[in-house]
Amino acid sequence: MALACVFSVSKAQLYNYLDDPSGAYSSVAGNATGTNLTRYNGLAADASCGIGFSSFRHTTATTYTNGRPGVEFTVTPDVGYQLNVTSISVDIRHSPKGPTLWRLAYSLDGGATWTNSGADVSIASSTCFTSTNLAFDVTDFSTSSTIKLRIIGHSAHSALNGVSTLKNIILDGTVSLADGDGDGYASDLDCNDADPAVNPGATEVCNGVDDNCDGNIDEGVQTTFYADADGDGFGDVASTTLACEVPTGYVTDATDCNDANALVYPGATEVCNGVDDNCDGNIDEGVQTTFYADADGDGFGDAASTTLACEVPAGYVTDATDCNDANGLVYPGAIEVCNGVDDNCDGNIDEGIDLSIAISPDGIIELCKPNAVTLSGTAGYDSYQWYKNGAALPGETGMEYTTNKPGYYQVQGFIDDCSSDLSAVQAVAVFESPFANIFYPDGLDLCVASPLLLKASYDPTYTYVWFQDGVEIGGATTANYGATSIGDYYCVVTSADGCSRTTATVTVFTTCRAGEIANAASISLYPNPAKESVTISFNNMDDDAIADITISDVTGKMIYAASATGTLTTIQLDSKVASGLYFVTVKIDGAIINQQFVVIK
Image 1 (tube, helix red, strand yellow):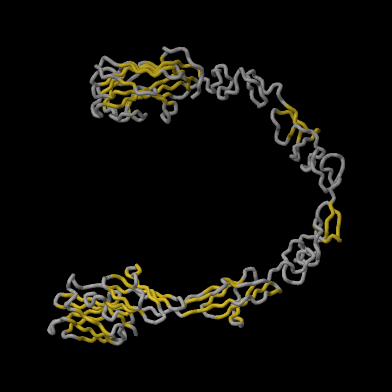
Image 2: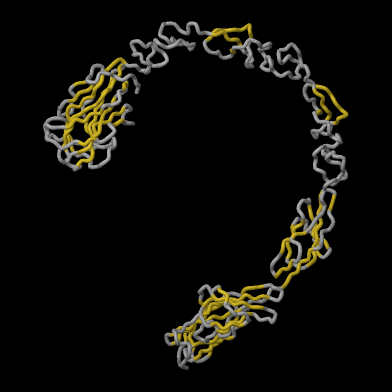
């Protein structure tokens, strides 16, 4: 859209539609074309009034958008012309169920963006021959593009039969020759209506264009420029051209003394090259340098061997601080190594090399089997040698050594040609961990005995702490504990040396209903733990009762199944029965008795 001045003519019409039911417009301004009214987005014709452009099936939605059902038409200026728009108006009526709120909107970019009247206008229901005028006094604008206009209603009382009728649609404005570039001059006066900088009132500038439309180009504004063949920013006074802007290869300066060398120009830094670099008439003034021989190639030179040159000769450097120009490893700042040489040229030999060594951790180290400790020597050595009880440990040459053996340990470090003394002795003491098993001679079924005796591995020097379901049992600090409730039990056993082990967890259960423990049928298993066989003793059971017996391992796999009568039955544990925990289930007269036993082979 090209904006121009505000137009004063308010009643001229660009487009006029009266009341043709087909939507055909009545007139369009000269040098412009228009389209008839069309319905969009769900509208359909309704000829109930017989006059005007009618529609129904409006939306009942209560908010305005450009996509709501409505009526639209377009006006397009002819090539070389523009539309000067001042206002839009329409007469609207609607049936009792038609849309009550309306807006006018226009787009200059084919519908991508819209300008609308800004607020919903309420239109009252009326008869076919009575309507309400809706006007949009737009901010005056001019455009050479097609104007698309929409008349949009919403908030209908019915989306099925809400009717509206439009008459007397007027787009006010004028048509004029286009001012395509918006510079205030129409195309009949503007010699380039595509460029706002070109018009009869413009100032002529040097750009190859007739800026002021007087028929002349760049009159009185050209400049003399000087060739800069070497691109150093300084020109050759003998080679010139006239132009509006600096041509490629030219500058405004004319002081270069050598336009074939970009490094030669007034003000350049004089360098040692046999050339008058700064155009002052002198060559290499004050720029030669003293260089020092670097026979060993370490970057540091011999102060006693020099030469003068413009550039560093091969085998020379600018430094003169090497104390040994025959050894490339000796120079100022080199790392001092243990070799009897002043490596860093500071006048000292092998200074500052720390050969002290120690073992960490230090102090008292006591281990409980099978735990181990990692000993570390002081970092910084190339290699190490570990010793135990005064003897070198073959192959143990790393900074760390891990052991679970008692002894007296030392380490020695090596750097280049030097070695440390043996470190101080670090003692490691190793103690045996206690045995930690639980035995349960009466089994684990409270239906057999209550309390059930749980026995941890015994030693008079051991201490004990019992746990039920992960919680410490207060006062349970002896090797034996009588369990009176179901749960998971284990014991932490600690030796006199402070080494601890935790037993495996055993589960105490009951197969009796409340009050059935006394005089109930039960079984006893022995020996427990078992090795070659296990005997089942039946208690409080009739002599002719039949007991169905199964034995399973911890995975649920059945390893034995049989029936028995009497008070005792012995089951042989063949070689296929491995060490581990097993479960015995006995069914007697509908009662089920469960008990565990351990096999140790």
